[in-house]
Length: 190
Image (cartoon, rainbow, N blue to C red):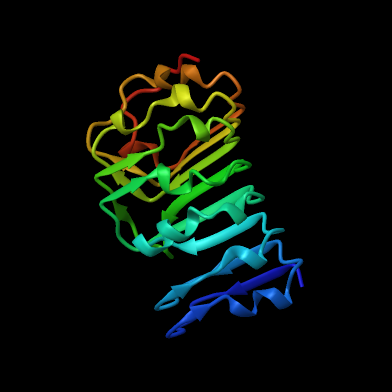
């Protein structure tokens, strides 16, 4: 078994004690457990991890045995703040996707991804967030980013100059879906 998915599982308690019986697990997706008790000691081959975000998940993500995770998807029910330092123990992370569960929109007051350990990211996807301003990003950190997606995001102070992306020298693909709520002009300067 290399792929394990639990969708909308209303488990009272999600425990990973039995993961020792699936040592080759590469992809784990868990949605809607009421409580987490994930011990990543047995999941050393894991390279894709999809979880609902919660404060307890942020503690679990700082785990030495997640060093092989290359793709992380976090689904938010509601969050005022997300700090990238919660994923600092993922040294080979190449793809980060942050968004709400299902079709909801997630209001977020602040998101901090301005950490040097994220410089290896090649894909960053942010979906259905409402940002107060674009000042929450410092794109000079993402020197290896090849794909950047803002999927149906809104921003209170719309972007006026798209030259903000000019630090992304490796960028090949920029996607801004439903741009009317996000950008006020199309003066691209890369």
